[in-house]
Length: 315
Ligand SMILES: *Cc1c(COP(=O)(O)O)cnc(C)c1O
Image (cartoon, rainbow, N blue to C red):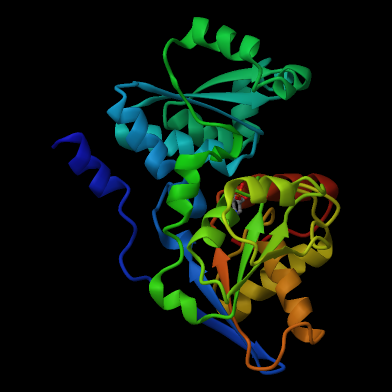
C-alpha cells in the first residue's frame, strides 16, 4: 500500500456517526456529536488534530514525531497510537523528571504512559522548569541533537494543521443547531469549529482550566467572532476533580449510555446541564455538544481518586 492509501485507511473517520439525542430540559434540546467514536485508538479531537500533521510528516519524509505533554495526556496517548499505526517513531517529552527515575514503577502506576510505551513511544522526562522552556530554540536544538530530524507536534497538538483537521468536525447538517458546545484546553479544537460554523451559530467554549489567555489564543487561530467562553466549570483547574463531578459523570453514563472523560467532556456537560436548568438558553434552542473523546484518561484519574478516598468513575 502507498502512504496515501495507508493514510486513507487509518485516518478515516467512521462514516456517518449520527448525532445522539441526549435530553430536553425547559424546552432546550441537547444532542451529542460522538467524536469519541471516530477511531479506536486515536481519540476524538486528537484524531482531528493529528491527521494533517501526520500527513505532512510523511510527505516530508520524517521518520519520527516528537511532542510534549503531561503524564496523563490524551495527546501523548494519541500521538503514540498514530506513530504505531503509521510506522513512525515517536518521542514524548514528558513533564516531571522524577517519573524517569524508576520507569517500571511509573508504567505500573500510569496507564497512559504504559499504553504509549506499548505503542513504542520513547520518553524524555524533563524537570518542570525545562518543560516551561519547551518552545525555546535552545531546548529544541538539544532535542534535535538527540533525536535527529523529527517532525515536531506542539503540546496539545495545536498548530495550523490541527486547526484544519478540526474544521472537519462540523458537517453541513450540523448547521441547523443554534448552539455548538466544545471543551477547551489549548483552544485549537474550538478554533476549527468556529472557522467552519455558520455565522448565525453561537459556539460556546468550556475551558477545562483557569486562565484568561484562552480567548486571545482562540482569536489567533480562528477567523470569526461568533464565540463565547463559559469560564466557571473548570472545577478548580486543569485535571482537578471533586465528588460532584464524579457523580455527574456516573449518572450521565447510567442515564444516556455515554462515558465522559473527567478532564474535559465531563466538566463541559456538567456546565451545559446547569445552564439548561437555569434558563440560560432561550426556548427551542438546539444544542450540539462535541464529545471530544479522552476516555483513556479515566483509568489514570481513578488511581488518583482512590488515593484521595473519592468514589471511582464507573467503567
Ligand atoms: C485535548 C482535549 C480537548 C481540548 O482540545 P484543545 O484543542 O486543546 O482545546 C478537549 N477534549 C478532549 C477530550 C481532549 O482530549
